[in-house]
Every structure is written in C-alpha cells, then in structure tokens.
Amino acid sequence: MNTPEEGLYEFWPDEETHQQQQQEQPNKPNGTASGWDEPDMGILRLRRRAAPPLPLEVFGDAWGQWIEEAAAAAACPPDYVALPLLSSASTLIGHARWAQATPGWTEPPHLWTCAVGDSGDGKSPGSDCLHRDVLPVLESRMVGDFPERLREWQASTEADKAAKKHWVERVRQAQEDGKIIPPPPRPTVSDVAPERPRLRQHDVTIEQIAVILATAAPKGVVVVRDELAGWLDGMNSYNPSGRAFWIEGYGGRRYTVERRKHGKEPIEIPRFAVAVSGGTQPDRLAKLIDGTDDGLLSRIQWGWPNPVPFRLGQETPRIGWAIDALDRLRELDLQPGDPPSPVLVPLVAEGPKFIEEFGRDMQVRRESAGGLLRSAFGKARGTALRLSLVLEWLWWIARDGMDLPPSSISQLALTAAMTLTADYFMPMAERVYGDAAATEIERAAATLARWIVREQPKEVHVRELQRDVRLSGLRTAEQIKKAADSLVEADWLRAPVKGTAFGQRGRIVYLINPKLSGA
Image (cartoon, rainbow, N blue to C red):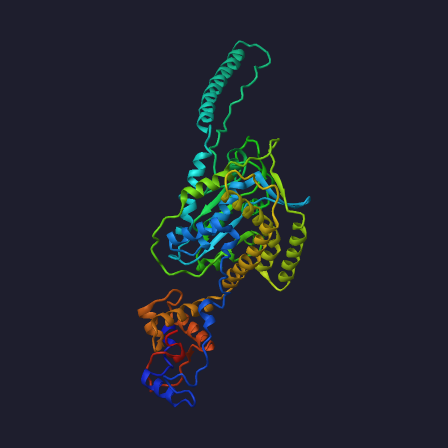
C-alpha cells in the first residue's frame, strides 16, 4: 500500500510526459509570457495593507531628528524608536498629568505600543536607545532616600521582633503564675519592606505589580517585553482573572487586589494604569490575536513598518540630550492629597469641538470594520487624547529649560495626535489584524511565493521542494500542493495536467508564470 505521501504522486505523469502535455495545450505555450495572466503580487504580503509612513513631523523638529538619528544608529525603521519613546514618555508623565477633554472625560497618558517585524528587522536595536541607555539612568535618579528608608525598616523590624518575643514571654509567664489579667497589647510587626522606586517592570504577577504601583511607582510603570506574546500568554498562568486585571490597567481607575496569603490586607491602588512597550513577529500575530475580543488588544498601538536596507550607523544618538530632556518629565509631581491626584490638563477652547468631530469620524469608519479593528476604532478618540498630552509634553521638554510647563493642550498638539492616530495607528491596526486573519494555506502560499521571487526557478517540483528546500510551513507534499494550488489561482503557477504515465510515478511539476522573471 502506498503511503499518504506516495499516493500524491501515483497518478501524475513523469516530467517528460508532463512537458509534452503542457506544450500541446492550446494558447498556452510553455516558457513564454503569452497566454499567462498578470500574477497577483498581493499574495506576497497576504494582501495585507501596505505600511503607512510614520509622520515624524508630529514629534516636533528636535524629537523627529533624534528619532531619525537613533534609527540610523540602530539600522532600523524610525517606527522602532518612536513607539518606545511614546510609551516611555507616557510613563514618565504618568499620574502627574491627565488629559481633560471635558469635565466628564479625562484620560491618563499611559500608552501601550507594540513593534511588529521579522527577526533581524531591528525591533530590539531600535528600542535599546531608550530601554537600555536612557531609562536605567532615569530610574537610578528615582532612588532618592530609598537606601535610608530601607535601613530604617530593617532596624524597626528587628525591634518589632524583639518586642514580640518579649510579649510572648510575658503571656506565658502570666499563664504559669495563674494570673487572670488582660494580656498586654500585641506589638505590630511590619512585614512590608519599602519598595525600590521603579520605572520599568519585566516579569510581573498581579500581587507584585499591585505592590509596586501602590508603594514604589505612584505615577505608574512601563511593562517592557521584547516578545509581547510572553506577557500576554502569562496573564492567566497564576490567576484566571489575570487578563481582566491587565485590561483594568489601562483606565487609571481605583483598583483593589486581594492578597492570596491569609491574613494580609488587600492592596489599594489609587489609580491603576501602566504603559506597555514590546514587540512581536508577524508569524506570531495569528496566535497572539486568536480568541475572543475582550478589548485588551484594541488598546495596543501597533507599528509594523517595512524593513530598511541594513547600513552600519556612523554616529551614536544623543543619549545625554534625551536623558536630560526626559528627566524633566520624571520630576513632574502629583498634586498633594490623600491620595495624591493628577493635575488635569484641559484642551484649549476649540479642542472639544475638534475631538468630537474626530470621534464621529472614527465611529463612521468603525461601522465598516469588524472584529478587533472595530474595537480599535472605538478606542481611537481616547488614544488621540492621550497622545495629545504626550506630544505636548515632548515638545515642551525639547525646548529651553526655562519654559513653564504647558497649562493646556494646544490645538496644534491635538491635531498632531489625531493625525498620528487616523493616518498611522489605525492603518497599522488594519495591517496587523488583516494579516492575523490569514489562513494557514494563505501563509504557506505567501512563503512559497517569496521563495519563487528570491530564487527565480523555472518550475516548482513538489518532491524536490519538500526534500531539498524545506520551507517553513511547507514540510509535507500535501502542504506544498495546497500552497501551489493557491498560487495557481493567483496566476503565479500553472497546474500540472493529470494523466497516466504508463505506470511510471512522475514528479508533480508546476510551471511558473514567465512574467515573474525578475520580480
């Protein structure tokens, strides 16, 4: 009995017979462009939307130039620098300032961003200038009097332990003497060490991040993950409500975390908001986005640029300038109170009218969208308001240090934020969500098409492709044949002619459209 793989070849002609049959077909001469339709080149990119260009002008002259310099030094698209900058700046502003569109609509600045690209496209190098070179310096400046407070806590803990030991001894002695007296007050032993001030966080559990936000990072933190899938996959690992917890971490509302250890008081987070900065590869998008739409992914602002030619950078970005500028955001404080509260920064007088029009436009675009993209359009107006605050403050810190901080969000900043949202982040969402919806056959066909463009073969031999080339997702004859058949429909290939070959087992051979030569 033939194996499943062998059975695919049993009724196909050998190569010589196949070539003869191809030549005998009317109006489709072999090896020439006549008789072939134009190949659908959209198959190469899974018919995903083209990448929109990053509008660098919205960052202002100073930051726009810095992004370009850092991207050139990292040999990556500027998008891979700009996205971490937005998340980092939003964290440094944190709860010190909130954007206010109307008395009833306020937004924290915290932004979630994700850079998408293949391995080697420069996602990590692009973020290094901030995550490796800038943020650690700023975090070290946040330490302040932490070492002294830690020493005081350690000393008081030892004193508490001694007091507790003395109390236990007194109670035991009273019981032995048969005295019936009210026991002395039990001393309070502090078991919560002060937390080192934080700006970044990597691996987090619900209780851990709650303690950090409640004690060490009142303005919030940025969750930094080189592969964002690890953060998303781990949300429910230790707590089935983990994903819901992180969704709450976008809105800035009060949140209470019940401690798992018996006897410990709940953790109260006055304003629960974190920023997120991460990356992922296109092949992981389908699994990343698979499942029901609970609103978490629609909070992410995606950046998936086209790769740039690799060139060695000749200059390093101005790290010192970026540190000094962003340090001004670190120094922003919350308003005193119990608990401290953010300073609300309103839109200028005409601002509410413009963002209302923007919100209606996003509603119209949402009606023709579906799935996650529909949810992304629903979040667009809030995204634009957050971005307007972040951009206004980025412009401020790039100017002379004597300028007073903004007391409102200008019309220029709001327009820039709406442009960035509508013309960049929403098209990027279409690109990401459309790609994630592609089927396995479509992905395999795109892989085969890229191989054809790269290698420029004259024909596709199924067995040779399986045995000698071994492309990702095209390991079996069945997978290769399905991908090739998909390319037949896209006018890339011509299907073999079925027939008998005098009992011989031939190779399945697909002719390639001559119009692809040099594609």
